[in-house]
Image (cartoon, rainbow, N blue to C red; front, side, top):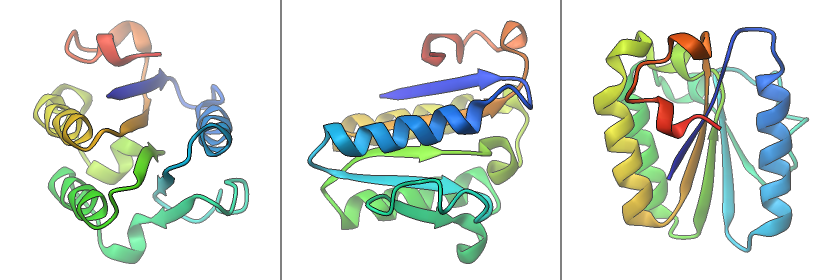
Length: 136
């Protein structure tokens, strides 16, 4: 399952994502992963979550991010939730180009019984139709 926090820059998306990740730790027995493009929020996310700075792993495209996600869930069957901040910065794609990547991430989550909560910084009323069902 994919959920999107889809809102403009400066609207509190990251704070909401951190709160959701920390709350997930209290409600799940599985593992939680928090992915970001820097370490700025590392100490805001509870230490029980696995914090991943993609810069440490050379992740600079949608395919690279997807490959990393596949590696994570194939190595750790206990991952129940993945939270991704700064998604567009990480994948270096325009919102209109995300359909295939979102389909692959959704399929990965479905097959591995986990959820992905992703931040997209953009105007919600301009969201492409294929993303609208995921917006929370």
